[in-house]
Length: 428
Image (cartoon, rainbow, N blue to C red; front, side, top):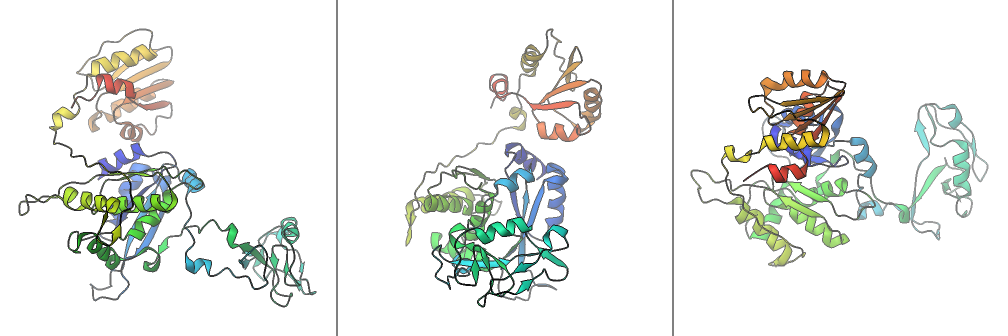
């Protein structure tokens, strides 16, 4: 799992996000691995999904939830672009129009905040004369000048609503801020996801039955609405919806189903890559989960099946052949080392395949090439990287090397350039 997550991190954009579904059995172990791979500051949230809605006699305490852990290379960037949850009918019903406001339905929200801030402790006079001050232990959520702008924004209706401030039906109520439905972009996600919003395991099994005629085709499917929620949060706001989604535990193909559904609804151009294996066993040597379940579902989602209309889109099923581990890294390291020196150095240092890594120095800059980092060579690499004012390290394992050289603040870690990888690199 550690190696797979490290590869996933290399594939992520800085503002991207990794979402992992896990239950109580491994949540603590997974959390430690994720923090080791991404770093302590990469944690975004741990969302709790209520997967079961009926009480069952399961163990000492009934198991009714799972987790979705969010990690990002840059949580700050992710927060800036993070998508919102579309308003459902239940949320829209909160917006009313009791005073026939020409701007349409609206709702009012509290205008107080917890704490004491001197510039937010002013008096507010309601239209019908009552004077309001913040309740004990709270202050107004706005400074007085911002409050004044809201009162002057938009028209007033009767004595109850002045601009964007609502004073209750009698015009003397505690002031509240007005928000219009037409302005509502969506809801900020939070960490509690109940089954009414994102579905449950029974719903997921019914969906499998709809697409396969039996719910035994896959034992542990995720509900479609759950994965839709993940995609809605992970997709950038005000974007062209052209994200690339990678699911390397594809299972029954729910992620692909959700991607095609969202593309159909909003005209997006999201693309999805699914990775899985056959899960063949000694007892079931011919089992092929990829072809029999995942690929079949994706095709039926696109083309339609039974009473379900097709969502459209394209799909390709690719099968990877098994490769001997010795052939995976058949790299011409000498040629890579020569090319790197030609890029950075005025002279050449011969390649020595006995060395764990290659070093070349020129005028205070050190060039290092790491063909393959092993644990016993990490300390020597760190010492070599630190022992120069400026160091550039090229490696086929950038994330692993970054971890090993975390204390070498003078070192710049770079992956082997794609052009060199194609010319002198992997031969499969």
